[in-house]
Image 1 (cartoon, rainbow, N blue to C red):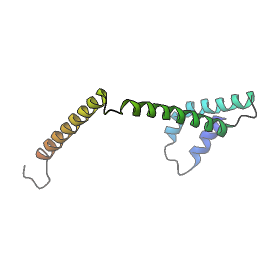
Image 2 (image 1 turned 90 degrees about the vertical axis):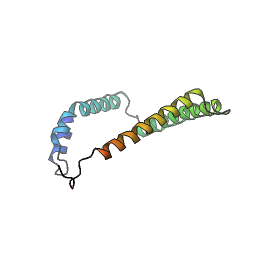
Image 3 (image 1 turned 180 degrees about the horizontal axis):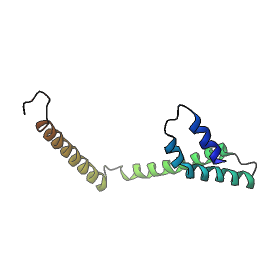
Length: 113
């Protein structure tokens, strides 16, 4: 079954990277096999309903994480927040130095050699 999809995709002129598709064949074949097994085990399986259920669970967990994070920060930033701010400042400083160094040492086409 997976080979049929690969041949179909390779025959389309819009897809120029047939070798990349061929490399991903194992992943596609595994996905098709999984779908076939699920379909044989439960013919009433609704992937969109399962995906909606998954999204609700993930959203609930994200809300709980965010609420917990906000509660910890009621009195101000945590120690980890200060560490992250310091690391971000160091990163911006290093970026500035690197940018300055690249500008000063750049080879310009109008520059004599």
